[in-house]
Length: 318
Image (cartoon, rainbow, N blue to C red):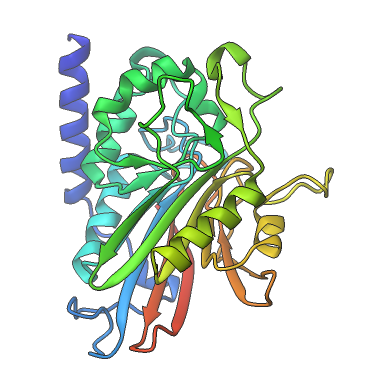
């Protein structure tokens, strides 16, 4: 079978198979789900936004085999598609996000260069993603070549691409409007020096994530008047052997006005988001769902007419 024909058939078959699988019981996560899509929870004075997220999927298209010692029968794009579709039927106000390292890990990437991953994410309706270090593995030229297959946005605020082919293709932030809720999403990437070959990231400049985040929240919260600000981070959850290294937990404490940090890079499995106090003693949710598409993160925001927020979060096994 020709390469193009295989990709098209695999993408279509996977998405359709996903919709036909038995529903996975997301209600078992303990999150209350609504059947009223007009406001998300049956209260006309409260608006409901569901944020679904993945990270470090690393080209894992298929589920793990039944005999796998750690993750038998877990993961796979088809199951994820089924779960996402089920949740969208419960609440139409959904954002689907990814925190990077979409590429590298199975022969699908080695052979197809990321096209299949982007096609499948597009069919599942991803809204935005940030870049991880492994998304540079075919160089920024290889990443650029696959962008036409991504029907979603890439955001990265601390990678300066102005002297590269990605200038204007990867934006610092994006804004979504969901049932009257204005959501700002910006991205952060890990330092590339020593982690990625210079020839792969070329003239990309890495800027301080803390300073950049302060600029982003000023724009999104103060200038753009976003109700919710989400950071898609590929900085890592925390580093026990290097406590001074910037990570999601440290970023949360040093900044303000970020409501949710969706993380990646360290493959950290969290059953529920970690709550951290920010620089002005307000709560920030930090979440990460491991790797390889095994879990799907879910965070529900409930906003009342005064823009007061209540959140519930959980990691759902795919």
